[in-house]
Image (cartoon, rainbow, N blue to C red; front, side, top):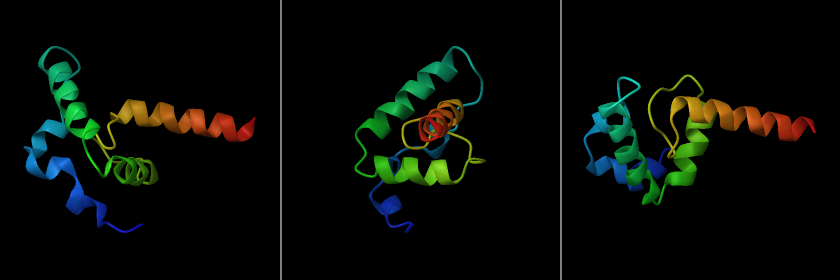
Length: 83
């Protein structure tokens, strides 16, 4: 997959730290919501998510999903394929 989508990514104009929250409560949850809001308006959302799913060890918010959300997404995909 080409990395050209990164040039169109909305997060290019934000602080990179926004998409890598540290912690699980309070400010972390606000940061996650802010990062997801950036993702929601991104023209490269689909490509970003595909890239993150192809690179499961990547941390942070990619394609509008957190690490845990991407793990759950992959599990659902695998279950659907097995059914």
